[in-house]
Image 1: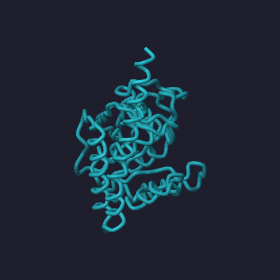
Image 2 (image 1 turned 135 degrees about the vertical axis):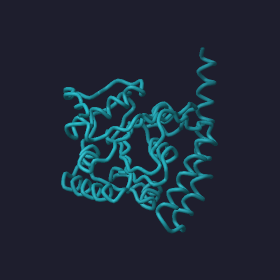
Image 3 (image 1 turned 90 degrees about the horizontal axis):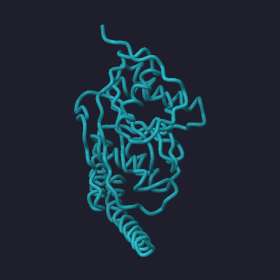
Length: 254
């Protein structure tokens, strides 16, 4: 048993170091491309190629299942958040046209902040109500102009499994702009890079695209939010940590 544990620990260390080498090898040309190439869409395509290359090289090619992401229709993607890998996973899994909403703290990270800014990400200060409202208005304007959006409505993550309560902003933007909501379930990221860990572990990653939710089928942002939670939880295999009471179900189409 002890020998098995030692071997498993050694594999984890070797694999984790290998992943960091892959990140360096892939991210250096990606960062140069993001710095030099004009056009947000072109830069996002480079980032998508880089993200897919990373997961392929570390033996964790993303397993896609479920529905297809709409190629033309504008929608709002909401996904569970369990690891720093989630943004890279969605970058690899979604078409390049998506704009990500990211917490303000990420803009201060030396490399990640530069990359996110060059990709046209929107930053929001979760602690400042006025800043959140301004970000919501910008997102509504972008959505009205046909820009698809991607959010992690939990806003944060930790090592403990479970879907945390959602923040309402993404759902308010989708409901007011009458944009379809696309819930996405990410599995494997928490195990592969737990909160506080420096070395990645071997293990698979999967992304489940659920069915589009039509905002007009729901009475308001709150019920739309709970509908998205139910869709994600069906494919997540983690507990629901929402402490609020479940609202009334969505009304039927007439």
